[in-house]
Image 1 (cartoon, rainbow, N blue to C red):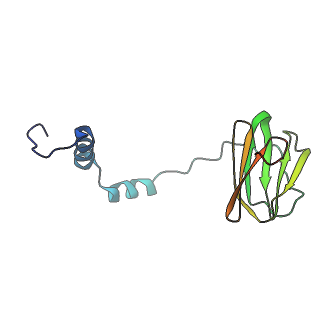
Image 2: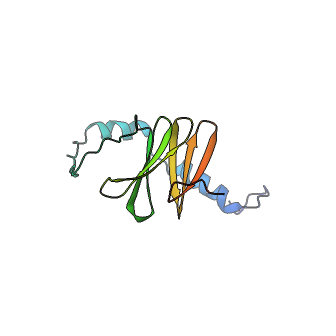
Image 3: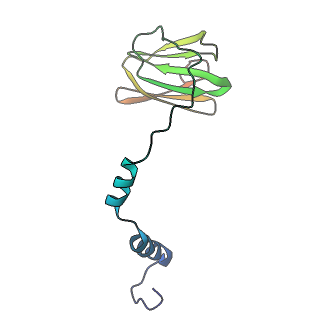
Length: 124
């Protein structure tokens, strides 16, 4: 690449592509060898099963203080680490995704993202 006359603001990027393409293995060979691998047995154990009380479970996240937050048909519900319900927030539409960062919970409900604090109140 040192003799290349093509101007690039990031020459390392082009070198990466060339090296990656040149050294890449044939994907077909990877599939054949993967078929011969013995499956690894599960190494986790179910210690408790939980059925949320607020209808169908569509999404789940872990918030601060090990709180378990679930999204259902029309609500966001928060449980402590022992699965005791702390609060329930009516979302108005199905909650299809949840995320938590810091002291906020983000719930995708319909065409909106609702932002809740750790007490289940709308933030802002």
